[in-house]
Image (tube, rainbow, N blue to C red; front, side, top):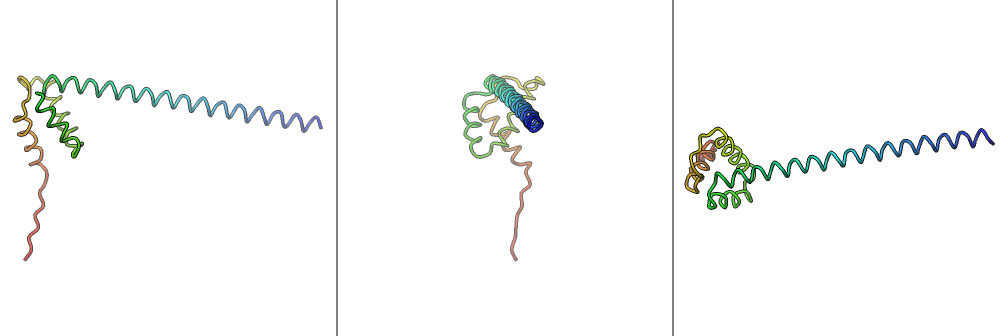
Length: 118
């Protein structure tokens, strides 16, 4: 019986070690996820700050409204505006009219498909 008890005890110790390793790994993954979320939150805050410096309030409102329907387009425009600001090619704040022109240019780049019936 002592051999059987010894085997059970060893097996129980192995299972506990495996469980502890799995819990440790889950904690590390949770910490990494929290760090990634924090980095993403910081990047969003920086982006928001830069956009508030380079856009007028009307242009920011237009982008906020447009984000509801075309989030990818807004992300593309914001990235383009930030890059332009960092390159120094923007002079003054971007107005709503300038933003409209930029939107029409980007929308014009998309391919239009026309179907004609005979």
